[in-house]
Image (cartoon, rainbow, N blue to C red; front, side, top):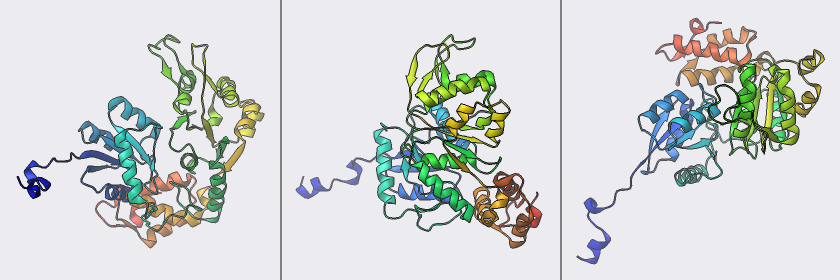
Length: 389
């Protein structure tokens, strides 16, 4: 065989490079498209999922070995989604990405070779141009203004952004204040994503949604035989957040009996599981949120004063939607695109939105726009008849 033939073997004899199935999970179609573009080499076979449930269906169909995750899922908390993937598909490698820039945020300190390869390609292809993928905008992202996952540039929100960026860099405990529907969970996620802990877990627990009898076990974990039904030991949510951030939503509803144990964890950095005498040291940052006035809860004897002062080291208050109406248009358009990509909002429909007082805040607006996206059917414009308030 000639040297030329040896240098250029027939295509039938060339070793084919296998493709790796990748599932990109995000409710934002622009982010999915951008990530698919960045993984544009023949080595990756990209499929898209718009929700956690959609992603799980694709994984059941064996359509993935690697999963790129936008943590702002429309249907599941990131910690819940991670737990489902780990339980049902332990072979899947998960890489969390910034929901605005698409830049990778590694969840594990010792990622797999496959995940590292994807991260390197995402960083290389995204290094020249970083996009803000919220609300359909593609201008370069200004690292000194908005927050990941949050929309609006009104003066009152700019103040929130500024102080949030300052505290995000520290390990300081933060309490987020604001009425229901103002976006406290999004702000907590933004603090985590802007912190040095962003590559580690962001674990959420709603203190009002879990019965008192189960909340202690959820937070601190338990050992086998600690109580009836404890057939095996389980790690608590605090321990699961090791190296990352624990978000305690609706902290004002935490039972008084549990507050002393939470205070001990905050002061000593130790966790004791139910039924065990062993203490585990943990490195976890705590962000709490409440829609009640904790000071009044303290005065009523429903909240420990020492815990109040331990949590309220740094407070960030989110405004009502009625206090940031300059953001109404951008919020409404963003929700419209989320639920019905390509749809536009007519001026007359927007006028109806601007006349409402929004007692349910941003969450109410989100619900209104989701209803409108259903009523518009296959149309391309949301009109007044589609707005139901």
